[in-house]
Amino acid sequence: MNNTYEFPMTIPIIVEDELIYPFMIRPIYTSDKANIKAADKAKDQNNLVFISAAKTHTDKHLSESFYDVGVIAWIMRRVSLPDGRVKLLFKSLYRGKILSIEGNDPLQAKVDQIRYEDYDPQEINAILQVLREKVKVLAHLNPYLPTELPQSIEETEDPNRIVDLVAAAMRLKKDQAYTLFAKNNVQERVLLAIEYVIEEIQSQKLQKEIKSKVQDKMEQVNKEYFLKEQLKQIQKELGTDNQRDEEINQYIQKLNALKPHMGEDAYKEVQKQINRLSRMHQDSADANILQNYVEWVLEIPFGQYAHKKLSIDNVARQLDSDHYSLQKPKERIVEYFAVKELLNQRQKTNPSKTKDIKNEKGTILCFYGPPGVGKTSLANSIAKAIKRQLVRVALGGLEDVNELRGHRRTYIGAMPGRITQGLIEAKEMNPVVVLDEIDKVGKSFRGDPTSVLLEILDPEQNHAFRDYYVNFNLDLSQIIFIATANDITTIPMPLRDRMEFIEVNSIHPSRKI
Image (cartoon, rainbow, N blue to C red):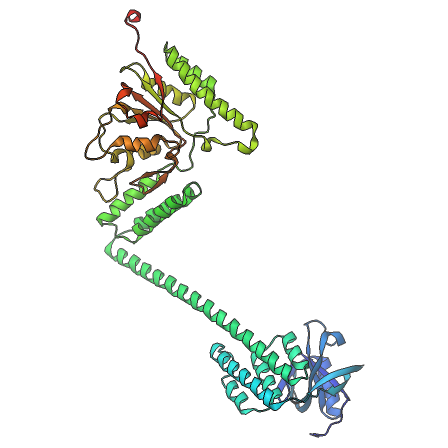
């Protein structure tokens, strides 16, 4: 090999898929006819070739499809292989740049050596120290980086040699490698190499963090799977079946079906209790209590509403059909619902304020009069007219506030309040609820039920009524409440303020048969 070559010089071009750096001895295995011709041409001359990198995987032997920089290499050996390929062992000598294309068969070009600009050794050494430190950091993060790289760059003093070693080890993208390769300013090359190393450090840290999170998640999933499989095998040995798992899955499916119609607090509470239930032993007392709770809650008809529109004609027709006489009470009822229908019609005239059946406020009526005059019957007729279910809540002698608000689940035999049970019975969230004998509500050491009734009957509060048993808010604002009483003077004043009273008189003795 002659070390005194004069440049510029016309030599063949070999186009490879990756950029080759100076001072490398490496083989190339090629079956490309153009590259083989270029190698044969070089063997006939001085064994020198120019090796460039292809920009794309298309026709890489077109002049615009490969980079104009590369290495000037000396072919050390050429061996033909049995599979038709040719092995070329070469040593890269200098960085080179194509000045012009001189031939196409084989591809040849006039090439000149790229010479580095002069630099300040003291300044470059300071910058190289930064590069060495960054490479050490990267070597700890990137397992694919050669372990001997930090030591190699410590023992090397040539800054361009160090930059080439780092770039080759990092396997830069072609555009990045080209930018670094083409520069002849030594300081700019070192600074750009530091920038690439810092970017790779940040990328490796991010990948490591993501891998750590994924690994932790996988370990947790595997642990849960392993423990569940163990539990299944134990249950199988004990002779228990998988009925429990099927029930839990059914609960989850029901909950997911109700999710669009439930409040966020309600969904989270029920989901939490189902998860607790799935972790409990099925024979424990707490599991039975929790299962009863889940079954009660999932029966609440979230999102189920009677969609019959209010019609004053239907109300009047149904009242006349079911009741003879009682003209004044029926007129008052018709007037009350006529006002409600008028409000609905006004809303329809303004589309921006139109509300559907879910957004209508509930109605609170109170029929009072002697026993047996038809108070409950009138409520039943109203429910028929507007096609809603009728729920009767007997309040006579009621003293325990938990009968309305529900018992806390810690008590044995705890159940939802009567209002919640009424919704479950009606299978809709806007039934007609009759609060029968509201004037006979008692008061004792168990609390004052009238205080709960104040919340139930207040349109500003009953949209978020909390039942102690279910432990989340229920919307009662769509319910039509109808109370009945014999003597309204015994009803507390705050409770009376929430009602519209309609008197139902008894039949005069002269009209009795």
